[in-house]
Image (cartoon, rainbow, N blue to C red; front, side, top):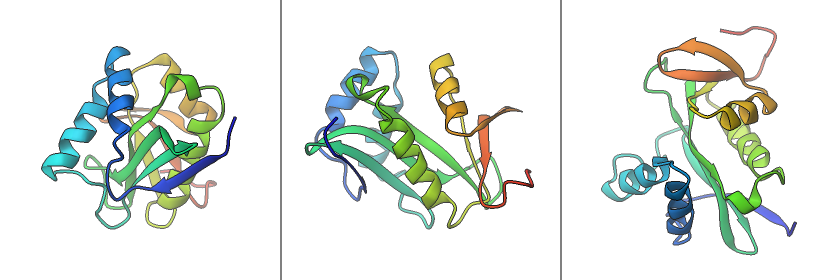
Length: 152
């Protein structure tokens, strides 16, 4: 695979529409929500501790993912949102590299990061990234950051 570049996004790259179309074709609407929320200003991942990262290969956006406060938990809890990897880039550690960078960013402000996934593939992916399953109405997985000897 060509060199992967992961960087923080302050604007949505035009290629987001390509990823969005692929996601919709796969039955996922969360990139549509990402674009709509960005355009109407309701979520631009620009609050303190938040970020939106894009993974690029040869200048093309191949994956995206955001980190925000978890609106369902305390102020020291982050939430992974809108993580999507282009089908052609799956199985090449792109998603793992993106999530790792999001977690490194999260560790500066959050004690725990949570997320929700509704597919077996997503669940297996997050387990491989070190998340643990949780029984919660608003999250399916979480990962303690920093001192992992104590979990919430």
